[in-house]
Length: 87
Image 1 (spheres, rainbow, N blue to C red):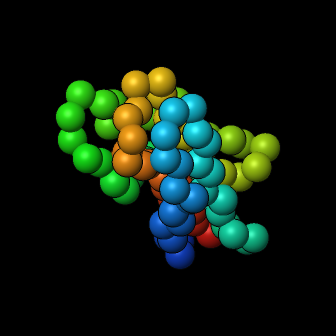
Image 2: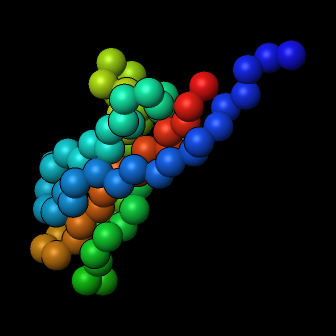
C-alpha cells in the first residue's frame, strides 16, 4: 500500500492591492504544497481586472504566488491561496 495524503490545510497569503503586487501563501513546516489559486478579496467593480496576471507555484519556497496585473484599479485586492497537505 502507498502513502496517503492527509491533513489538508488552506493557507491565505497577504493582500495584494493595486498594480503589479505579489501575494504568496506559504505552506507550514511538515506540509507540502499540492495546489493553489487566488481569492478576490476586494473589488469595487468597474472596468478593472479581477484576476491576477500570474498564478503559479513557487516550488523552491513551498508556496503559491500571484501577481496582480496592470489593469487592476483602486480598491481591487487579491490574495494567493495555497493548499497544503501532509504526505
